[in-house]
Amino acid sequence: MTSVLIIIENLPLPVDRRVWQEACTLRDAGYRVSVICPKQGVFTASHETMEGIEVYRYPLREGSSPVSYVFEYLMAFLGQMTLALRIYRRTRFRVIQACNPPDTIFLVGAFFKLFGVRFIFDHHDLNPELFEVKYRARGVLYRLVRLAERLTYRTADVSIATNASYRQVALDRGRMLPERVFVVHSSPNLRDIRPTPPRVELKRGRRFLVLYLGMMGPQDGVDLFVEAAARVTPVRSDTSFVLVGSGPEVPRLRALATAKGLDGVLQFAGVRVGKELAEYLSTADVCVAPDPKNPMNDKSTMNKILEYMAYGRPLVLFDLTEGRRAAGDAALYAQPNDPGDLAIKIFELLNSEELRRELGERGRKRIEQRFNWDLDAKALLEAYEAALA
Image (cartoon, rainbow, N blue to C red; front, top):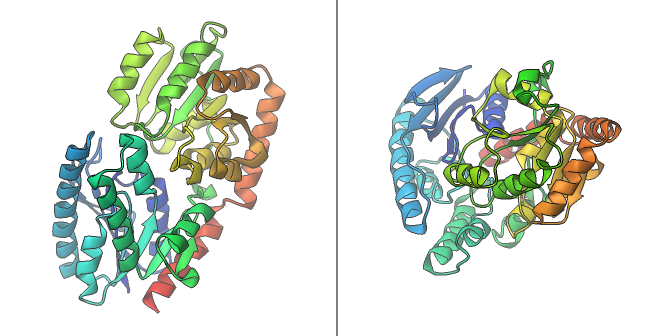
């Protein structure tokens, strides 16, 4: 049995849906799978076996400034390397799959390549663009981020891209050979999508529920969602809002919600998985992806968009290149970075049950026909075969 190791830094399993699906696909294909990830929320066990997948976790404190991010990445590297050495003694893994951010995991991969281990770069985020969006600067640290990306590609035997834009980055900036780059979308596994009857109590006594699902960092635009909610509430007092997820921006978002008079209207539900997450997605009348237009988001496919469509939910998002490629005619598109227009599109959906149903049906059809994990699983296994060949 071939052993493989997957390393992630920004989310634990099973919260990271994409990595969990990848791990399960590899397990079902006969690989022995170990995963290194951080401790976060309720997932604090240092080691556990989840459905045949060995999960190892290390403590990590998230950074919020350039200096603290350096400390965070140093802690992550030490935790990952320590656990990788322990796992290698047990399993003699033949492949490391590194899921960024950060792009420093290549250091672990480069070390184990000395022992013949293959290195796969699973490209989740455009880190140079992400750094620029967060800090609006191109100083020394930015150049180091660019260098880390180049070295990651140089170390990689195979690269996995989440969409066509990321594939082009691998070809242009990474100088990867086309036959060494595989597109594996973050498509949901329809066998894991289990809609439930709507739970009226989640609407907190109101007629409609508008939902955001995902990380809450500076680049995610959740503040724009809060601004839009503040414009909707005075006109539609029958609407409740909920944020499902976590991130470093939560304290600032709570303060913003209070300042906008949204206490009691906007709920912070925290991280939800499994049945609880399915209940929120099945109950929501409108779903929102408020990711602002910037060099990173415009080229990124947001998991939340695909999850909304998998549950047949109508959605609103800003008009971004990869967002439109993913949602197609299953969404309403607001003017980029404009919370006022975002609110107008939410109004449009709240005011039309027929439009909500039509967009929801279109979205579900797109998932069934184009963004289905059964298709992406084949590409993932092809990437592993290429790395091991």
